[in-house]
Length: 121
Image 1 (cartoon, rainbow, N blue to C red):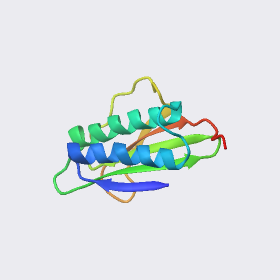
Image 2 (spheres, rainbow, N blue to C red):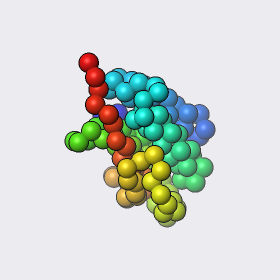
Image 3 (cartoon, one colour):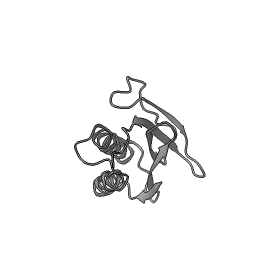
Image 4 (cartoon, one colour):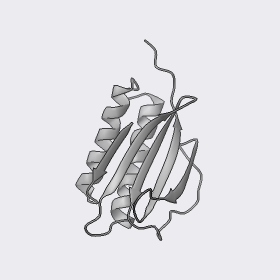
């Protein structure tokens, strides 16, 4: 699992995306694979939204990436603005997505689940 707090700034959002890519590489899902590219895109979008719409001065945003049973990657981005929820729409590159209260802090978490192909040795 990767857990990373980042400043709610464009630089912080870029760093969150880059770290998600590095974690996917560490898990054997390299650039150009469907899972890597989907996680990169989703992380970039959610981190940018957290910076643009969820920013509260003095409060960090957070990225969490985890592997789930059944061959899925879960991407979570939390910000401090619980009252600003995203519009419901098609999941796009994700299998599913949603929102939840931010664990242990004010705000919300937007999450997405991405199918991840098996790693070949």
